[in-house]
Length: 258
Image (cartoon, rainbow, N blue to C red; front, side, top):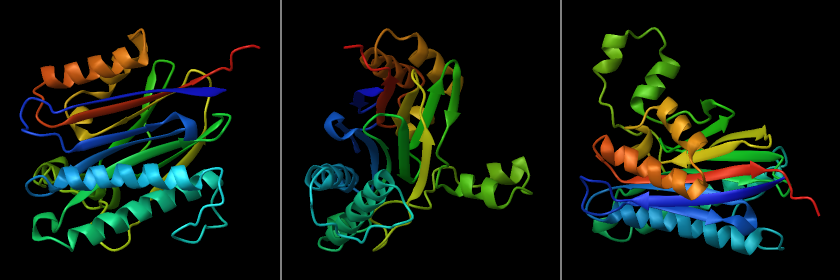
């Protein structure tokens, strides 16, 4: 099998500048979405640095005898090691940069990354923060990542909390991000793929405004991945466009005969 990719980003209707960045590297079967946060324009700096670091890392190491900044974990697959190491390196670069100037102090970014193996039979998803990865298989959409947010952590670790108590929690507090500390814990998921699967990576500018069934409906009915990205962004803006909106799609396809 093989993968086909598309990606698009939009400032939305309420923000003055776009702090999201995306990465699409078909040659290495890698995609990513980063959603920056921080005062002034430092959120853009953080997300851009995350994406450029991943790009540099994959370019230097995949298929080459490049030097790794952290030791490989023998318990992880090749793709898992690439994803974890790339994200940890991005975290370190953002953290170091944030210490150099007051304008960048405290900046960070959420990120979600997906890497397919060479035959697209398996995908590894790594994420930090509340940027999400979904899998659309047939007419069913499944969220593969769990948000690193105060609300999500409460639901996960304190299931006895009532709906009323959950509603009192501030909705936009991120509990994990790149660049906040010297090292970072990356959540990993690896699964087998099937022909026709579509993996959707997005910032919360999409997932916070467009419901999962609507996302699934748009993606499955669109004539192309590029058109699906365009309509998803259009729909998020229709629902208010409160934040920057970034979408990356990866479709698993059968190899063409011959």
